[in-house]
Amino acid sequence: MTRRKLVAGNWKMHGTSADLDEIRAIADAAERLKGRVDVALCVPATLIHRASDAVPGFPIGGQDLHHQEKGAHTGDICAAMLHDAGASLVIVGHSERRDAHREEDEHVRAKAESGLRSGLSVILCVGESDADRSAGRAVEVVSRQLDASLPREGAAGSNFSVAYEPIWAIGTGKIPSTAEIAEMHSALRERLIAAYGAEGQSVRILYGGSVKPSNASEIFAIDDVDGALVGGASLKASDFLPIVEAAAT
Ligand code: PGA
Image 1 (cartoon, protein in one colour):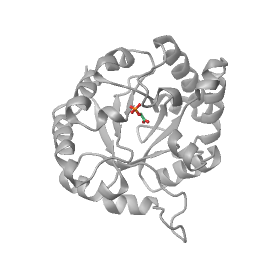
Image 2 (cartoon, protein in one colour):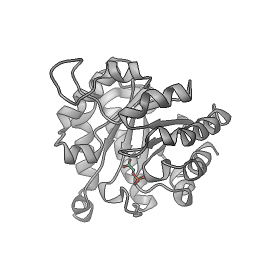
Image 3 (cartoon, helix red, strand yellow):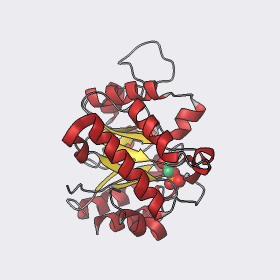
């Protein structure tokens, strides 16, 4: 089945209102490429409102959410707050949160379910450590991680994507070989079909970790790579747009 590629930027803890012109330039290009590739930017929570006002209709997302709908959770934000600020999607389970905030699979699953229930699109991240890759157990570890973090309901279709992000490839300039990416994405596709039946075919599997203009075309040509989650190279339109264009062709 053909799945339109999704290229999502993850700005992490970068970006203030001084960067709105970059967001406008990215949204303008996305408009020109409409129908050929889907583009989104997940910005810091403090920037969501201003960003979504600056580029109406262009998907702006958050980078995390609390799994509950409201309550005594100092510093956290919930799905309704993301919607209220203008977000239409959210990343859950990024390895930086799994690590620094000790988010376990069950917790990530609850976040994904909360986002989907509220009508946000969700990008669920999974990925192995350097040690797991070196020990030859990357596929086993990531498959298990996916099984344990997959939302039980509402996940089929283009509103739900999985991002395979090897931890050792994030921000390092290192990427797995084409064969390693292909092997992982095909294993994850099998897990999605095991969980959701034929609907598992409609879920996009993005690759993330050191995606750049120079390697994007090669990565997008791999079977079952349905787009990318891009960190560092999404901060400037001049780096991000060649990646978006590679996904559109
Ligand atoms: P990177 O980050 O593109 O800077 O490697 C990707 C990510 O962490 O989502």
